[in-house]
Length: 249
Image (tube, rainbow, N blue to C red; front, side, top):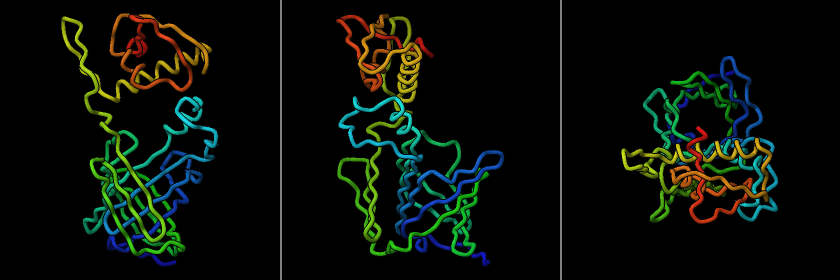
């Protein structure tokens, strides 16, 4: 078996599939469906847990079950450009479905036989990659989407599309002032309050189609409920009645 290092981004063009992710002290992952499409510089990566739910009857968010939402939240997807410093490759994430990681996505790449092995630089992991031989490595095209933080990447007959959120998870969402002082709430915090509310209601036996009334003074928790309707349950709020997801923290 031969071991050969990868010396350029250009040689990585094509569609890759992952067969193994291993970390010390944790079970190896051999089931997640991972597709990495690499162009001359840009890339898009999609990682989905298996098995995939059946979404054939889903027409809107209201049709999603709680389990569907959990599966969607476990997905990973990111896009950007691949940088090589002569020793390590770094997948710079300009678009990321998940919150930003504390360390860079970087590692070394080398061949062992027909398997491309990635070894983490800032995190201790190993991934096994396999190039799809049916996908041509050229031609490649990259297009930005006008007035949108999105990118369309095509390599041979395959393409992948990535679109960022309208606002980053760490961006300011709302400023709450109770007359004495002000608090700034970010998208990440409102999303966490929304999830806490879902869990509390589900634990109370409330399911989709049930009605519930939650009363409190006007607080940012109401923004969490109004901004992202819960697919698990439905409710009717009379004028002046709000919910307080912030109290669930």
